[in-house]
Length: 227
Length: 228
Image (cartoon, rainbow over all chains, first blue to last red; front, side):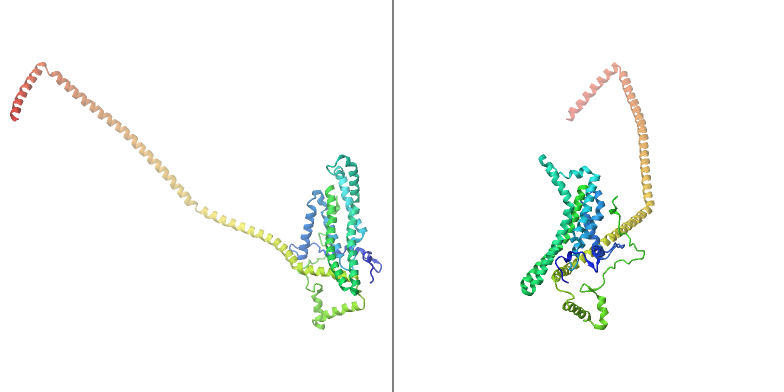
């Protein structure tokens, strides 16, 4: 298999059958379904504890109306976390490296928060365009700037996730290519590159988890403003 | 209405009874290969069978370039090192944590049950004590009755004493009156007798008695001088 650097980002297909749906839905298979027993086995207990932790963290700054978003935000978090972490394994396709998928996640959710705010409390959500305590002269400029910032949010959300993950994966590929190529000629340098690769892997694991968290956190922040 | 709040996956969705996840996973060797595989090969190839199979397979794939060593291999080596290290280091801790969570859950429920049992037992003992107390009622009533009787007796005696003293006072008064009366009569009679005697003494008698007294005195004085 001769892989170029960008083969990992192409949509996977086997004999012409697109496998992208399976690869996107695969993380759902890794989560055991709800157990009807009271005392569950270790995996279910840990999963329950983790989901409780995430939900509490996400939902504590929101008021009661925002708690309706608990299910979608928590499941989004788990989804992104698993996809990102699984993408670090070799020869795996990471769906979140595709800008299309990230924008498809970010745009509707952001739009939902915006429309919820504009529908239920229009003056309050429009009021967020002007931070408190600004000098009177700056008001027009600031409103334009804040509107731009508001409209850029979905793009920022999607592109942030895509860019972080794609860059990480590309870096891993490049440095591992360097390691392998240098192995025959300069083994010492190759070993150094291997060390760098090792550290990079640890960084990538952290980035995977953090990016998922940041995505969901920002969404909950936008929700907090608007609900 | 936000349909995202509709609860998903609350039931198994299949009508056949799906068994729940087992408490402990199956035995694996090297974290990947189930023990059953080794047991399967044991009768034919002994203990080293599966390892020989694995090594041979790996070497075959590498030498025939069915698996090509490329950059992904280096990346795979790194990520697998990290994963294995993390599992070996943190695995027992995480398992202990999960067990602790379960233990706490069970312990809370058991504590509640024990507390309920304890409360009920204390209630039973209290009830028994109350019943014992209720049995001693008759003694309590007897003591109270005795008290009351004593009070009545005391009261009666007091009143009796009062009656006695009052009657004595009245009788003393009568006695004193009589004594006084007799005394007065006596005094009066004495006075009357004296008065009449004094009145009966005529002046002639008075002179005679005085002359007689003087003669007597002279005679006595003579006798007295002689005695001295």
